[in-house]
Image 1 (cartoon, rainbow, N blue to C red):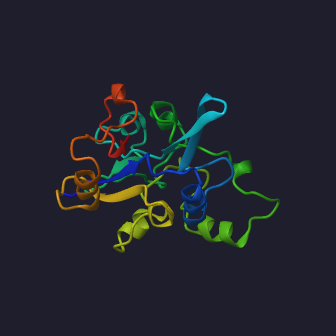
Image 2 (cartoon, helix red, strand yellow; image 1 turned 90 degrees about the vertical axis):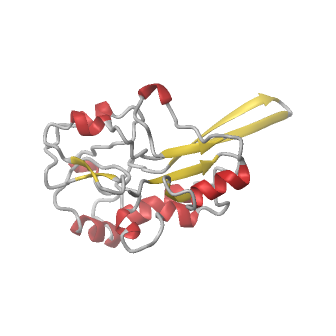
Length: 205
C-alpha cells in the first residue's frame, strides 16, 4: 500500500519561507496559523557565525496521538497515510491540539479567522469550502492536489528542492531514490523520535 511522506534535506534549506507563503495561499489559513513553519538559529562566534534552518510541518504519523485523543473521531487517516480533519465531526474539544507532540494542530478562535475587518476574496473562497468554522486545522499534504496527481504546494514552490514528496514504501519513489543518490549510508531521521509516533516526515542532516 502507498505510504505518502516527505523527505526534507536540511543541507538545502536556505530559510526563504517560500514554503510558508505557498502553504498559506494554497490552504487559506487565518492569521497565526502556519502549517509550514521554518525555524532558524544562529550558532558559532562572530565573525564565524552560521545559521541553521529547520522546516516544520504536520508529520502524518503512522501512530498519530491526535486520533486517539479526539473524542469525536474527527481526526482520520486515509489509506495512503494522510491524516486529516473531518470538519463535519470536529466538536471543538481541542484535545488533538494538546496531544500533538509537534505543536502542528491549530484551533483558531472565530474572531481571529480573517486578517482585516472584512474577509478578502481569497479568504471568502477558502471559507466557502469549509463545512463549518472554526474547526481544528492541520497540514493535509495538500490532499486536494495529491488526488489530482500533483505535489503539495510547499514542495513545488521550494527554490532549492529541499522537500521531496512521494511513497516512502516504494524503493523507486523520489524520496528513496534521493536518499540513495545523496546519502546512501545515512538513514533519514524523524523529529522527536522519543514520541514513538512513527512520523512520515523525515530529515537528512
